[in-house]
Length: 168
Image (cartoon, rainbow, N blue to C red; front, side, top):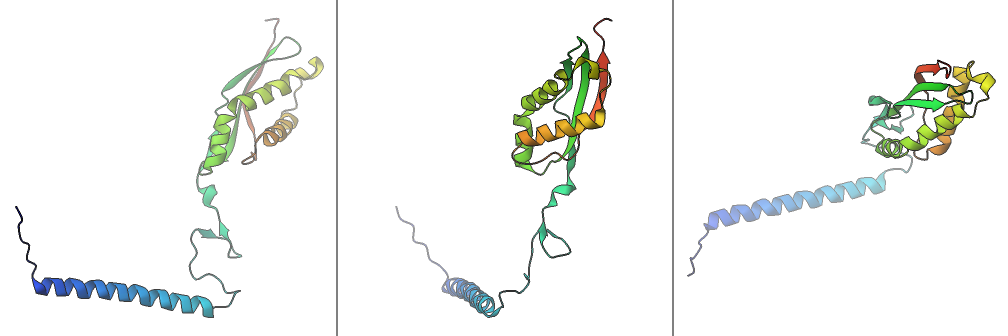
């Protein structure tokens, strides 16, 4: 069964004129933009720029807005060459908005733990009780950054650093 639909001719005319007006305005906007783009010099500054800008006018990534501390390595228990055990927690700042680097850190957590364990367990027995913390940080930082491909770690923090003697 068919039901006839009758449209008000006045409504159809208003709809037609509205759609033609919108189409005409879009075409006019495209023509004006094209002419403006052609007439503009090649060394002109952008009219509209998304994101933050530096003093030179270059867009700056807004990573510095959300700096967090990565402590996903947990507390490491590292056997040392003199039969002692080093208890150590390593943390470092990273940009949470850098998704690729954040995912790489999560994927390489075991590798980062191994790097720190191998570094401290390879120290000679005479140096174990006299660990130079700043030297250890800089050497481990270099090893970590060599292992990472999508970003760099800028600083390391050691906490809970203590040596438990085997004789106790």
